[in-house]
Image 1 (spheres, rainbow, N blue to C red):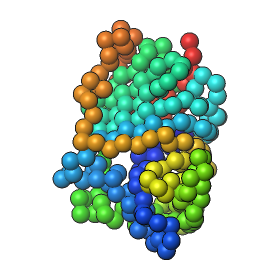
Image 2: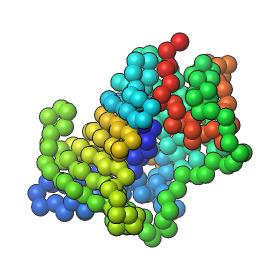
Image 3: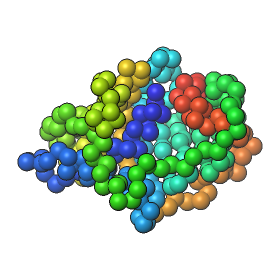
Image 4: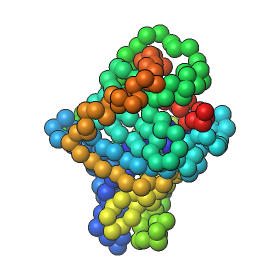
Length: 259
């Protein structure tokens, strides 16, 4: 659903090549993935990113998003390696925050937290939340483009009618040792003049999502106060067990935010 699309976004946003002419599509993909791979590189000083996105469409086996949910809301996704994530609504409407700081997870406001917890069901056995990581060593991160197969690489226009590239890709089935169709596919639209990803569509037989990307920023670190409730939020914040983290993150997109 929406969060799968967001997680896919964390692996695809970035910068691209200098010109559409005679571009090797896998060289371009390498530049797409480079800043994200750098987040996981042990010697890199860039360990954080923020992206502002708008969920335009999200549907799965449990239905589509509707009024009162994430649809058409601006979301700010903040990630800091190795174990911090904050997803929040910005702009008009009720302010909602889902935040992980290490093994602590909290949701604001409490009314939304209660709905997320109810939708997630009872927690499983107590378990630690794993750090964000890639199953690759430092010297293998440059091989990230080999994990994908590009089926189409074409010049295009973005929503503002600016020159862009459109890239269709999916996991390389030979590397996942499967003769079945790829488990998911994505189309990324990237503006040429500044290499910013402007739109992302991700789909599988079970779920689909479309995101408009407003901005993406990479940095050394994010402000430490980002990971704790503000004074105004503290009274209506609820902690959730680490064992519910993954399920709650997935269920967040199905919850009605309205009172």
